[in-house]
Structures are given as structure tokens and as C-alpha cells.
View 1 (cartoon, rainbow, N blue to C red):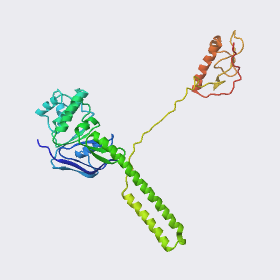
View 2: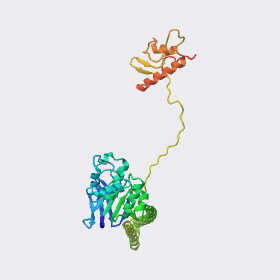
View 3: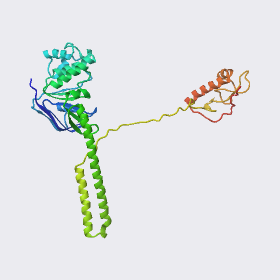
View 4: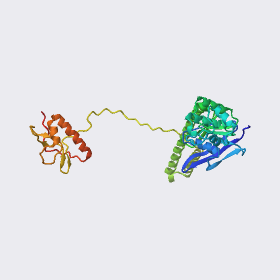
Length: 388
């Protein structure tokens, strides 16, 4: 079957709400063309392919096909397959034709041995990738628009896809992040630049594109530096001559005034010509960097309380005096009503233990109460526990 014809996008602009996805983009896919479309995610690569296929309306510009009967096929990357769809239905939807006797041969060529009535939900990830490859091999288009065709393919599948792209008669435009694949299959790179609406074209595969892009960026930076320096020089000259003309005023003679005015106008016209030949500032990607200096460990102690008291109505938690049978001297207990000197069961248990254990128990109890409510740090009139 003879494949020939051209699809061309001319100064197309595509917007979604307030967001400009593509702006003033032109691209031509001629017979035998092998074009790689590259750029960051979300930059509009898939939108460009869909516009070329007539699936995405353009707000401005036009997409033309020569001849008008040209068959343009867009094979999208499909992450979520219809689990109830059969293999035959999938191939028919992707290629635009009902599955015929060629379908079985193409499936075998793609390394997929499954019946046409098998449901997609029963396929593994690798089988789904090979089925997508089979849909590309089975399609008969004049222009192929392939969106991430290398996804989920093993080395054998990649080799089969590369041979197909290189041998097909029609034009091919492919969106891919696989640099090796682009190096082996395309002869032209279209870059949708990150952070701007600019589009650049480079001859060759990925390696040639990378080298030429660096040279072009360096030259762009030099050109912008020369333009910016020239503009700054004439801006300073214009301001200086304008100030001289104002300062002279009535004190200058007519000839001197006219000379200053002529020089001021000449500097202003030079600035206008510079603006007409303006060189856009090269876009520089920004990167957020955060540095945290290592801090020394503060120690084991995080917080300490001294003579803290928590009060709830008639209940007070803190240092107070308690008495217990057989205990000599005054000891602190955690939890008593103000003015009360009766020992609680908790206090008796703490007082019967060693002084160190009693202090530790009171600290744990105090910490639980302090997390729940208000803390009063005024000194308690109660005496601190005596040490043995």
C-alpha cells in the first residue's frame, strides 16, 4: 500500500481555561519524516499530537492535510484499559478497522499468543504492552502519531518497534522520554521548551539535539548579553543628554539647545530600534535548595519542673506534707485537698517505698496532670521530701 501525504500545523494555539498549553506552534510531518517531540511533562506534547490528528480543537491557527483523504492515526498511551473489552475490540478501536485475518499474524509477530476474544482484564502488564505494540503494527496510516509507545515494552518489543518506525513508508511523529530509542529512530527533534512557550527544531537524533541545544543556548546567552549591554549604554546616554538639555535651559544659546535636543532624540531612536530587535532573556530553570546545619544534641533532659502545683477545684497536685503511720519526718505526696493532712492510699504506697521511688512516682503523676490543664508554678508552702 502506498503511503504519502503531509499534515501540517500552522501557528496553532491551544488553551484550557486561563492556561495556554500551546502558543503559535508550527510543525509539518512530511512523507518519510521521523520527528521526535520532547519537553517536560505537562508542556503540551500529547496535545500537539492530538491537534495534528484533529482530536484537539485549536483556538487559533490551522491544521491541514494534503491530500484531504490523508489517514492520520494517533495512538495514545493508555494507562487504564477497559477491563471488559476484548482483544479484537481493542484492536478495532485503536486501528479504526475490524480485526481480520491479519490480526492473529500481527499478535504472533508481537510475541502475544492470546485469542481475539480474550478480555483485557486477564492480561498481564507485559501482555498489555505487547498488545499496544500490536495495534501499532496492525494499523495502516499515512501518518503515525505515537504517544509514549515504548512504555511497558521489553528489549525484544523495543527492537520490533524500532524496526517498524524505521521501515514504515508514512511520516512518523513520536513523543518519548527514551533517549536511546530517539537516537535510533528519528532524524529531527522538536523541543517544547520548559518554562516558556518557545518551540525549537534540531536536526538529528537525541545526541545531536543535546549538543546543538547547548551550543544554541550559549549563543543565545551571548546575544542577550550584547543586546542588554547596548541597551543599558544608550539608556544612560539618553538620560544624560536629557538632563543636560534640562540643566542648560534658558542659559544655553539656541544653537547649543538644538544640538542637545538632536542628540537626545538620536539616543531615543536608537533605544526604539533596540526594542524592535529585542533578544529575549534565556530561560533558566530554578531549583529550590534547603540547607540545614547539623545541631548538637541538647542532652537527655528536655523539661524540668520545680515546686509545680496543679489545682482543680478542691484538688491540688503538687508538693505538700503528708503523714503516714510509722513514718518519721514530713514527706511529699501527690494529690490532696488544700488543708487536708490525711494520707491517701497512693501516698501511703509511695511513702512506704524508698524516697527515690516516691519522688519518681510523684513526677510521673505530675506530668500526666500537667499535660491535661493549667499549671501554677507558685511555690508551695509544703516542705520538700527529706533525704535519708
